[in-house]
Image 1 (tube, rainbow, N blue to C red):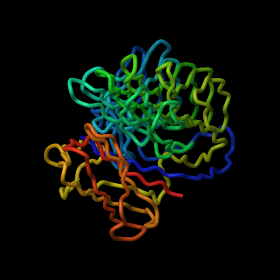
Image 2: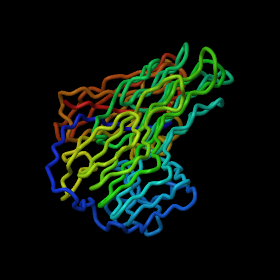
Image 3: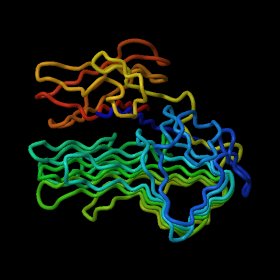
Image 4: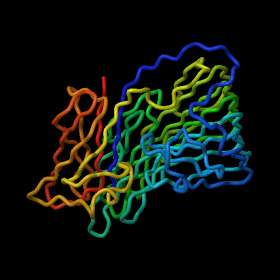
Amino acid sequence: MRAKNTLLTLLALAFLAAPAAANITIPGANNGSEGPLNVTSSTVIDLSKAVTGTWDQAGTGTGVGVYDSTKWAVVFKYSSVNISAGCTVTFINHPSNAPVVWLVQGVATIAGTVKLDGGSGVTTNRESAPGPGGFPGGRGTYSGSPSTAGQGPGGAPSVNDCMAGAAYGSVAPHGGGVVYGNSSILPLIGGSGGGGGIAGGNGGGAGGGAILIVTGQRCTLTGSIYSRGGAFAGTGNGWGGNGSGGAIRVIADTLSGDGTMDATFLSSYGGANGRIRLESNILTLSTQSSPAYSLEQPLDVDGVVIWPPAPEPTLRIATINGQPATGDPHMDAQALVSGDLVISRASSVPVTIAATNVPTNVTVTVRVVLGADPDYTTPAVFQSGDATISIWLATLVALSPQRVSAIQAKVVLP
């Protein structure tokens, strides 16, 4: 079981005008401490090796990055980045499926490919694997085990016909998920999972990942950055749904090149787009962008916004069925509570949610992905506190004894 805390905020940001052709101040300290990333052959970056800490601490110098659970990101502080033509960079997920952040002190040159695609649906009784920052697709019906919904804030339900695709920046043609996030890609978050199908083993595709690349000087893109949603598995009635595209955000003083950025989906049967965001003082990019990018120009050279500005609203699942959820809320929930969480036919399970900087008059909801019954969303009721710190309560139920696959808390702020 995986407990995910997802916070969606609608943010209006005002960037100050800045002189052209000036180096950008990279946020945080000890910039460049991981040294250069120089890729001359196809490379796999294992995010699970990241050191747990705070994002603005010094890098290890070994290129493994730092995982910050409060930001839900694996952050690398490179002195420069060079990905040679013909070379591909892929990733092994961190256990939390966290997004990727590259803070590059100098120049970034991407002539090869950076790939954060979500995995395609599988034909065994398991979920498809997302790109870093994305969410798994649902399981298809398999050997008597029913299909499950896709995970993530735009996750699609399990289906009775075909092609229930996940949402993100748009809604899939046959989808059931809801649009989420914003054009600034704050917070950094990837695509959601497609629903599993009812035909044998037709799993849903996983969501594309999310990456933020910030360069203090120039970024040249003549290669490709992919963050596409995974394709569904199977054919005929009852197949699964597509995962939605992920998120690509690039910030640089000068941004040029004729490469490709793609945050759509891998299946030809339609799916939902992710989001692409470019921020630059000098933009001479003639790249192919799918979907179309949003643009911020010019930048504030004294510092760019890479995290939601303070006071940042947060939600955290505090207890599940009376047991403290004291670990990282993005990790496997079996690390948070002992054993699997099962809701019996005649019982209910209380879940408490701790909120900070969330008004008490908004709607907080909890999405529950079950092992067989359809997923559902239930409101959380305000219990105590104020707009600074508050506690909310949601109650999980099921039509039959159920193993819970995921619990995701959400608030949309005005």
